[in-house]
Image (cartoon, rainbow, N blue to C red; front, side, top):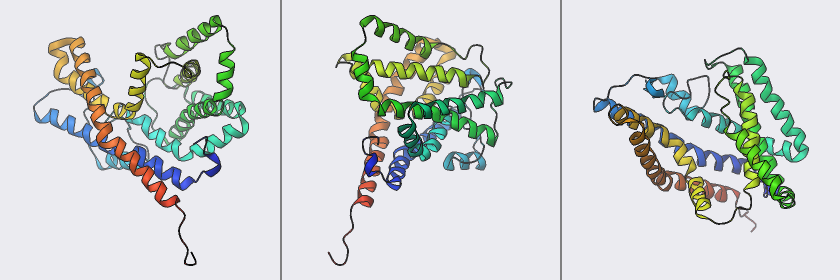
Length: 305
């Protein structure tokens, strides 16, 4: 999108983005409901919240919220990771504006987004671990997560400059940056932080992730790199489907077989299913989006032609 900004058409972008994200999302909601419904049908017993598991009770308002991404509703009721996709879909609609702001104003725009993230902390700094389900909170949270889209846009725009700067660094400096990236990215900010204070932790984690991306720009082709590349390819499918699979394994296996077998089984099933989901649903969605954008962006013949 950055390289094609001169020929950008918002309608094409919006169609491609919706078709890219929405059909796999809807399919994953159906799969999650099917998994939990199947567990109940075979007589599995668990309480909602046990080991952080879900036990969705589908209502009209919950279904409408998940389908339309509007209103205030418990975003993680069916699949606990989907709350973040709700924000991503909302932010995706406005991403061209974010990209324009970052390309026009550079680090100043990123700094403004970081400042807006701090507004979320200031507004809810006294809230502990109860998620604030209000329209104002939803808006501030959306702006907060838009900060990381702005960071990513800045990295993409300045990729060549970053590559040149990185090439000039001494090995010791690279090592120190790698250590800093690891500390910022991996530090457990959740431990003593309230929910709203996580906004501050998120910013530091985002900076650490950005440093890690910069440091790995020119990684060579290795087994680790190829594994990471494959995980990146199926990452959206894995993201959408791994949590219901993990929770099903916890419900069925944890009491009798413990954490190791439960985790190993969940990882194996989740990776296998992500590959299937990617091939069956995600890739066709990507192709459909490309087909639609090409169809509607192709020049139409006039009567005089």
